[in-house]
Length: 324
Image 1: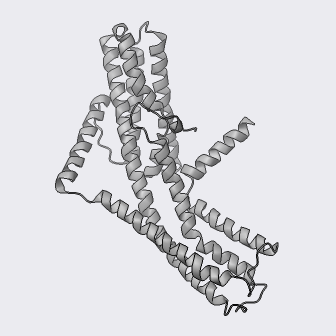
Image 2 (image 1 turned 180 degrees about the vertical axis):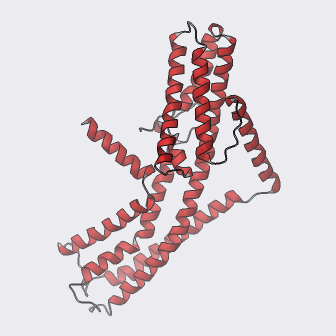
């Protein structure tokens, strides 16, 4: 039972986050085509010359495709609103990025020159591991609560490092891949636990242990900030790609709608034999729903990322407890 539950969660995670969006969209389109053909063969629906397929294609489906084009334009307007700005705004962004790098480098006690998100996050998590390990080495006769926390942070850093390295070996290095490697509330638990430990056990820690704990806190803050920054970039990239794909597939869908409409010469006739209409109409409808399938596949991932990265600090809503 547990194995089935684990498989279900892995499948759900693949569909919502990790799966190739083209594969998911293609699965939806093929599923629609197969369903329509099966219903036609079973005589549940009819696509013969006297059916209302032509009116459906020329009115309902055509209007729906125009709506999808409007959606693509709206997405582009949203993206454009994010990329425009004054020189001062861009200067502030650059200064903010530089300050963030400097804070992380100071906490890690090493430079952070990496520009690729994967390399930067991997180096930051390795620094978190090193600082947590150094903190643990300074815990002579420390309370069990403090030791357990050090073990927890070490396990968290090791888990993220292993995920990133595994994804890199598998050829996964996109911004979205990096984003999914740090889903979960572990960093937030650390942000809220460290002040508690400092307040309750600060007098029991050596000066070196206190310094290392402060470095761990700064690195966890860095993870929180970097996660939100990655989310912004990943969602912008996904939406930009989605709007482009809707434009491409929308042209194919419109042409397919026009051709299928022409197959029905009049309300009571068709240019194809009755035996050919079911497969032709089924395949045609599969092509027509591709823009909608792409929209669904990408919005599923964007909505999931947004839901599980709502928190930017130590307050984590129950809905953000992502199950790996």
